[in-house]
Image (spheres, rainbow, N blue to C red):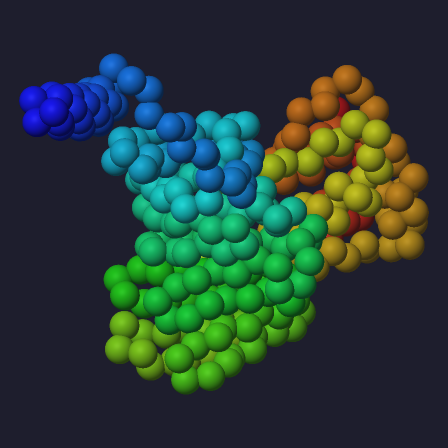
Amino acid sequence: MAADLARVRRRRRLVRAGVAIAACLAVLAVAVGLWPAAEVPLAEAVARVETSFGGVVVREPSGGLRSLSAGDRIRQGQRVEVGQRSGLGVIMLDADLRLGADSTVVFAADAVELLDGRLYVDTRGSRLGELRIVTRAGTFEHLGTQYLVSVEAGEVVGAVREGRIVLHGPTGDVTLAASDPAASMVVVSSGGELTTRAVSSTAELWHWVADLSPGFVLVGRNADDAFRWVARERGQRLEYASPAARWAARSARLGGSDDRPLPADEVVAVIAAATELRAVSEQDGAVLSVSLGSKAD
């Protein structure tokens, strides 16, 4: 009887030891890749790349870098780095976002954290307050607008040239509103000092934005639509020299087979070549003036 009991106990010890060894082997197999580990679900895609040039990369969770090009998706939590002489344009929450050279951001579901560099936002298709830009000086929220935010050398700048934005800072809220033809700017120094002032809607701080424009497709559109787009891209006010010029622009429907998106300068040049409409910048660039002239050769 005693001998039988000893044998049972010995068998139980052997079974427990076998289970422990099997568990250790399973852990080791996963560690060295012999047994596939559970698949980690990908984070939600929050933005789509429209334009990319130069050195633009996304930093993967593993620490590796992957280049971004048109059509790629950016996922929640990913850090994107834009190199020197580079640029990135994305669509997020139906808003047009453009990142200038030497910029670093982190994407969230409804916000972008700007760690360094310059970010331009055109929220034309986005609902009020839907997209937020987070900086060390506070969070910028739009109220229907075109605006930019920059973080450089510890200084945070916010400027709006259409509509309004609100900066929710540590000491309270600051609202900036654009007033034709001027834009408004807020500057928060590295020491936290806050100042506001007016700035031209066509000032140099906006110039880099045009390099990342999505472009305008002329085919099937009228010249008035095109001129309005050009003026908005440049931060200008559109004016017609005469009622006849305005009527001609609204009547001129542009044809052809070239459906490529064109930058603003090319849009103006193509219309001049195809019609008698001439668009020139006046009043130090603040106004896009359209008049009738002779058709270009």
